[in-house]
Amino acid sequence: DCQSPILDIGGGAGALSRRLLQDLPKGRAVLLEMAEILTAARKLYPRKNQWTGMELRPGDFRNTKFTERFATIIMANILHIYAPDEARRLLAKAAGLLVPGGLLLVHDYFPDRPGPALAKGSLYDLNMMLNTCEGRCHDSGSIAAWFKEAGLSAIEINDLNSDSGIICARSKR
Image 1 (tube, rainbow, N blue to C red):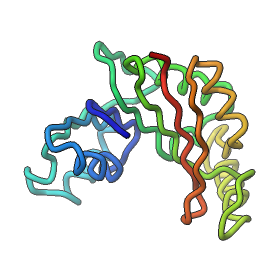
Image 2: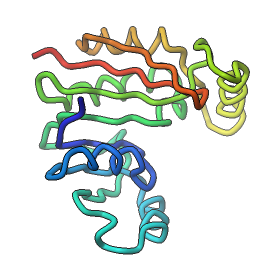
Image 3: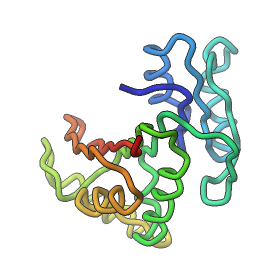
Image 4: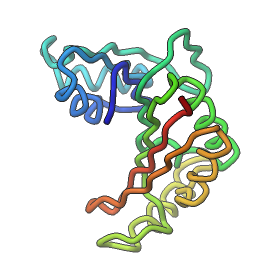
């Protein structure tokens, strides 16, 4: 039950936003991503009509200021880049950008969730430890607790066949 406008934080070439916009013919998505990633995304999708309804906004969510609020916010494969305190702060920032009743989606690997390859979340956690300054895969219980701290409710945890999951919650009306 996603609505527009959508904020896709670190969404790469916007795969999730693209999919959501298919169900929202007059919808709009803001794809916030590092400039070099947006350059690569434009090469992947070179035609102007491939960006219909999408605004490409270069930037780093940690220090980007917003004047608008969003009905749906996607944080896909981003929180694992950061240590728990920073990840919690970024999730709270995103929650603060929601309109009343807005939906926040976190897609990631959660090492405490079941899946077809149970070790994948743990292996990805090890990858984050080795290849980022302080990153790690946060367990679903921590993400759910951060949602509550940020004032969100109706928290749902959905395990996907891809060994990852989506945790979503709504801002209070």
